[in-house]
Length: 519
Image (cartoon, rainbow, N blue to C red; front, side, top):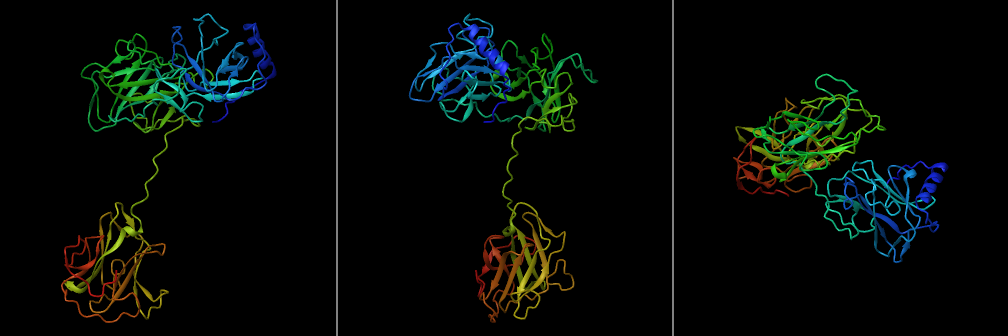
């Protein structure tokens, strides 16, 4: 985990310690070192309005001995100046938990046992546990959480963290984890404006009003009657229920203004300090889409700029800050804030290309003039993508070969632009005058032959041999299949046999075995 940057000046440290001692007259300096205690689970979604629903931090003792926490410090993103010290007598039992409820508004009226700060729901929150000299014992950066969720170690004290769907305050961390979300309907929360300041002025809409834009990525209208739109609280008293008869057009947009007391759209607020937007099917029966909005806080440099946040391309998983709003229109050409983007989902790793060299093969060789007196060689692409054959060659064994080492003559070389489609054929005729789609070699039905198909890198990817695989080929008896070709049966993948000529089409049924054919 990356270290959280914490500015520590001598005066700040002294002020924090002085504050701790002033608030707690029973303060006793802790042991020089505390180790083996970790931040184990954190809950941040409380609104701090009820004494029995406060934010909390759970510690876990990974050791087999009790540990005195007296004077150990803890603070959140507010900084060290807000450090809170564990009071005298704070002990965490071996292999056990210690939970601290934060009490931002003093509902418990006990500042010694409860820090006077709350925890942010947004992604910029962090927690630090440190010795009295501010040396860090443990720290964690928190993600944005939804109602009821906590962030904790997958198992108590382990190094891996996850978001839990429900918390286990003061108990063993054992899930369930937040379920992975997949948009299956094709309706997306596509762009959100949540920086409702009167300072910025833009044409096209009143920039003092937030908005939520929906996008239909499908080819048919989507009826969203009764769908429910929520902010981060997912509170039923704040939800917006879409009126009956509302549709989002195919490949189109539907945009709602968002402001409190809105009679015709969502009436909740969207916080500039970060928020969520959710859309559910009626009765909250199924989550349709969600989007987490980054903080445009005072210190972010993003405030009052008229920036929006959304998906690019429309309906994708890629999220960006846009420097110009595209309300109710495509984000695909929206200018993106340079140098800023959240952590993006990884693009799927490309599959290993199926049209390898071996996917293009000899499929049929006709040497009997059985096809209207024509001899031909047919290639077949057994893959599912087009293959360029530029630089590929067909070569034939010849005892007197001179131009290719190993007693082979090139009888065809593919020029640039010759391709073979997925599942397609390329037929080369025995034509010595047209080297583009003609091959210069004999194809005897009487004598043994050996052809090799070689890709542009020089690799032999397929061969056809009739006779022994040695040289020279001895004369073979005339074939009794004078009206047949040498063909792969079944087409493209099978062994060689005799079959009726089918240049440029799938091979037919086997009519006989090839004499002297060498697999």
